[in-house]
Image (cartoon, rainbow, N blue to C red):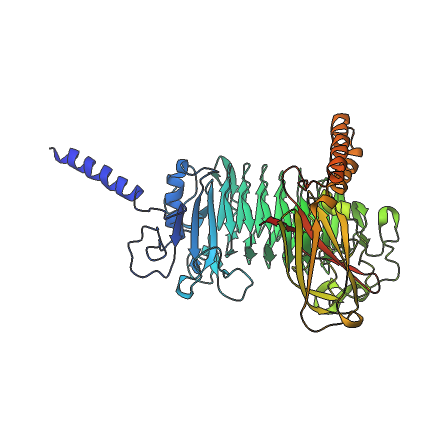
Length: 587
């Protein structure tokens, strides 16, 4: 064999070995651990973890045709600081490009951080070390050169370009990006142009719409826009439980900048970001942002829009609190924006807002359920306004002042959602306005609640650990989790409504007593529609159920066999609170 042929064969074999060097373990999981010792580094377990996330992502992208929405690759990343090592560019992928290096989000690859194998945190069922939990966690850092010298930092820490499928970023701190070069150079990533002066923390482009959750974007800097994140050209990331803090943009959007983009943001905070305009968020053009249960506070600009600068129109803000942002105004919107169940406690003199059930500083407008702010101060609304505690205080006018339907229309679930602090989103009959639900000491502290179906009966059991001023409970059932029927009233066992010991409650309801009521619920739900055939069918069902009840025959609670249960607690003053919703399980 000629030497040249031998060398070619050797190179091909070596390349094949490199492609096959990683092998995901059970569940299609590839393990990454900076501190791994020993093992073969194939990535099929924590013992054999890959030391560098950059290597794992390079391999994942090389083999991206193997990952699908039904069978995504998961990469589990242990605590530690990880830095980008390779170019994400379409024409230079996998090579060292110095400051152009970035972690590349790969289609149908899910990244999970916060694991600590040395201390038993080894799976998603364990309590991971997430940003804000007190530990270091999994950090993606652009500080790739001389430590603490940002002049040689990566322009971008993370880049997502093109379709992302079910790609996910979950449980990371993203920091140290420095997009400081307005030199006209743009990388092509996933067919999208990535500029060096935007999106230093994360740059999403060309329809990139990853899920980003339980993550922190902090201390990233951009010469243009989007210190924490930049969403560009139809990028529509779904962002939840994230914090954008202490990011900087010389132009707009210290926390986030959006341009021809449609991000959805829930349960997140924009805090202490700085920019020329739009300290928290800057919407440039053709942006339809949806934000629900979000706080914008203590952001700073030298121009307009300390919290938000919206140069587009159509964005919807639901149960948002915007407070104590600094600049010529806290909010600026040149186009129409929609504010529902929200508090804007900043100057907003240049805002074109359509508000419903909201509270705007210095506004006396009470149309559409809005609250007259005349004579109110921050101390009348917030728990500790001077020290940045923007939860509602007792007696605040925002309590029970929201519109439940507005929240539901925004995609919320009042039976199961929480507010920004993790408390039930609905504590009374009407939702509070702003990102926080007022959470005083509850009159009843529920213990375990269970619901089962056995021998044609619904068995509901619950305990209370404490009761204060409690009067009674209403037991409610539903065939769909939406339409509820009260089927029993149970008086409190506590003496005078007060108890500091565990009390047990049990209730039994024959299904035969429910059937006709559920049929009427179905009939009522369809009566508001214009579907004649559906209404006629519902009426026929009601007749059949009535006949079956008369014959004392058990009837399934719903066509799909599902039955939902909740308990309404009512104190002696008439105040209500709801238990969580359960689905009754057959025995």
